[in-house]
Image 1 (tube, rainbow, N blue to C red):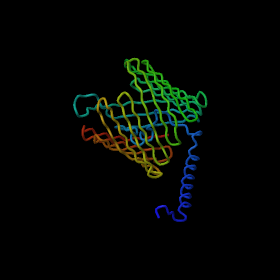
Image 2: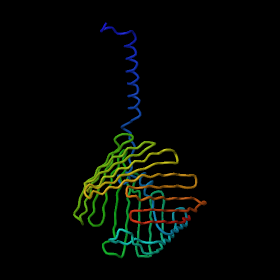
Image 3: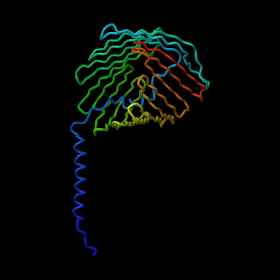
Image 4: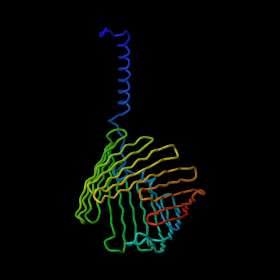
Length: 316
């Protein structure tokens, strides 16, 4: 009796095996490893989490006006009035009132982007992005200031392959860096970076991974400088996303974690977060009319007794 096999058992087993084999074949057909997507740049691994958790918070009043002269060239004017925090050994923040005006010029076409800013305190900022070929792009950032040793220039060459990206960075102070990221599956990419800061005699290497689908994005990064960064973004619906990040430095033992949300309404976008230090933040952008946006910003740090509120208008 022990060797008796009921009729049909072998047939059912073969059918189950056949179905499993079909599923495996379908998975491999969907995952075409010869046509993997090109990953995002290494420096943008946590892009979705940064957009949700770290918008451009500010304190005081801000007014931005942009006037387009033609399809490619525009001028911008920005006025900012609010307190500025100064370094102090006290646990409470010390602030002084400040105000500044910023004039900008922008040139944007299909292959070139030129952005320049001049501030009343003497700083000059410039950004350049130029597509040298279909796969090779040049990015440059520069800041010139009257303060000694505070001016800097950074050049970035970004090469986009079929399923990989590589970058080469050159900067003043004998700064050299290189990174490479490769798609290994349709949803996962792995990468590494190396840098050398000759002025400070420091070097380091880093490794990173990113996994993304239509509903979520998870990214992790670790470097020999002691930094470990993790982020996760979950798309709950077409309008709502939840995000969290974790930052740890195993040399200084500093740890920070935060959780937040990103809610896109028809006429507004609301973002907010709370971190492990007890700091709560919120940022609201609302479109009042075509070309007119209202902005609200708030940060509450009860531990440091530092409370920041800001509002602004953006025209153009």
